[in-house]
Image (cartoon, rainbow, N blue to C red; front, side, top):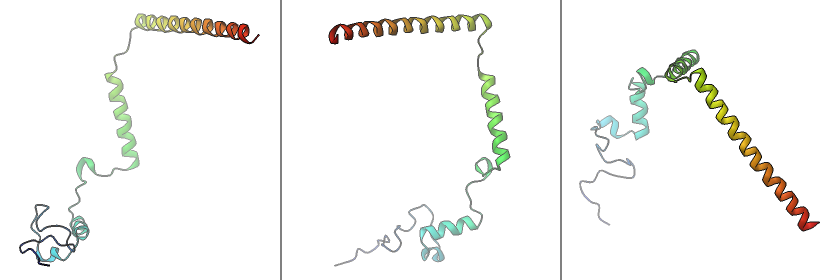
Length: 117
């Protein structure tokens, strides 16, 4: 079996040289990808900084309530007359559906009584 020359992808490295866009230094060639990532993180290369950094419990609660207040300010609240109109429409619709269900229930009850005696 012959080995292709020039190929740097080996089972040991699992990654061709420079595939992640960064040329590896001789020290990094011996390390696995996981070890290189841990080394970069310990050097201060943590990508979670600024807005994405982990915040404390009280800071997260404060942000949550600020977002609630901001969303409630966007709501268009109905006027009193609109509220009465919408409530009337809902009540009339519910009563109409109740009458339909009552009629069907009474009809099926009489039908089953007539069939099964």
